[in-house]
Image (cartoon, rainbow, N blue to C red; front, side, top):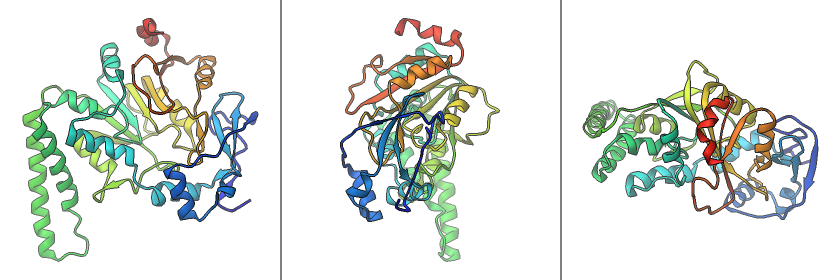
Length: 336
């Protein structure tokens, strides 16, 4: 066994060791190309990864897969920037284009009174931008100015190695940018803002420390721009209305812990994820339709929203809403 791989003989979600191998064709994508190039590994080595289906929770999982050290290298060095996530926020503030979640935001806004909303790890993959559009005036100049001034504010303090004079100038400029940000938000707000939280951890299977744009980390940028409070995911003193997990449940080595945390602390949990019948090599695991049946067996009430939200899909994906309380899911009965 090459030292870049390790065995994952138990299901990463439910810890079962009941598996059936799923024969799949090896497919290359731009992530795999970068991994091969930087790690100097061959298709032959990658093909050592076999895909198995857990017979308990029905996720698909690669085994063997990369070690946690190599996984951290992939998501910090090899592909440290979450391109899709950053493209979402750039397209919104420059082109007024929201991430495509079909009718999801309208649906939950009508059905649920949301005062406290949270997401996990990736700030630009879910509905935070929808809330921003809902709370501030839909004004092209405002979008352009708030985006530009937030970048300027967060880069203005990057003065390591500069002279004291330049540091003083940068400090004065940063105060100007912050004042401008506060003014822009104050004069363009149209609706009371809800409480928004981004729960984070330091998983070596996710973008984090190196997820930067113009030398600004996504967490710092989102907290300033989108009015988010950053929380460690094990802080459970908040009672949330909705917790969104958007393309991040398959980017942690402890998905069950994250999922249970969300269910415990929120009335509703929304999950959006890949549904890879052909599991790619950059992913340790992927959910399937069978996973929803597993949740039902655990007395977690689930509604599959994949087709209900009327999104046009470019790749196999899964959206579902779940809760531990039957009274909450009854609001969505007519959607089943």
